[in-house]
Image 1 (cartoon, rainbow, N blue to C red):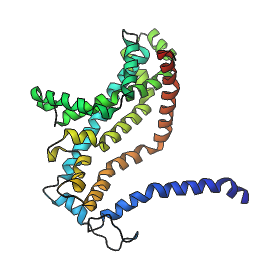
Image 2: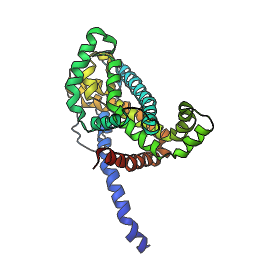
Image 3: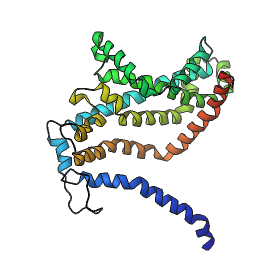
Amino acid sequence: MTKWLRENLWRHTFAIIMCVFALFPLYLVVLSSFNPTGSLNLTSFVPREISFENYKMLFSSPKIPFLSWVKNSLIIASVVAISSVVIGAASAFAFSRLKFKGKKFGIQLLLLVQMFPSILALSAVYVIMERVYSFAPSIGLGSQAGLILVYLGGSMGVNIWLLKGFVDSIPAELDEAAKIDGASPVQTYWLIFIPLATPVLAVVCLLSFIGTFNEFIVARLFLVEMSGRTVAVGLQQFIGGQYASNWGAFAAGSILASIPIVIIFFIVHRNFFEIFHLVIHFNFKHNFRIIIRFFNF
């Protein structure tokens, strides 16, 4: 028993401290959501009064289209996640397996795009989409379709590199065997690559969905109409708009908005961490060697 405590006590102690460190802010948010005063100033860590007024405000006030915000976030995040997987998987397979002119330059360009700070591109993206609005309002500034295009453009480089690292780990002998049997590159892609890469594609899809669902800066820049906002942008008005300092409603909305993410995570949590580790391992191991070779370090 003494030996077990000496070897494992520090691990359990560290795990408990990290859990408290991670869950304590969430506990404060939950308490604030039931606080009828709409304030973060809590006199006790044990709730003395529980009120659902903040939750009722989200669904009863005609000035707060909370359900529309959640629906917009789900639609935008789903479209971006699925499109990222479809485009990223095809591009990664092409860069890894096919031979075409400009392949090396394309991979280098993707790497350079990832190195460029995305926050610095906001002003340029704003000007471009503003001009697009003048002749194509449906995909220009202020539209959800335009926001989706911006999200896809910003995430393609990362997703392609991530998936390419996995494709490089698939033995080339499988492609050669399929070619001998008369399979075309398209058949090889659908019959060999897609089944093998399904777990990795699921991880990329989930990460894209979560990142898009929680994104605020670009969505705040693009979406103007109240009913067309995402949930992250819509909730901001409780602490910076006409409902300024209403932290109780903000906390309640944050908890409700996190439910779809939690549900999706619990559905795939059994294999998520193992697959995510494999994705990072393949991406680092294979792509690092590619970077060294391409840039002649």
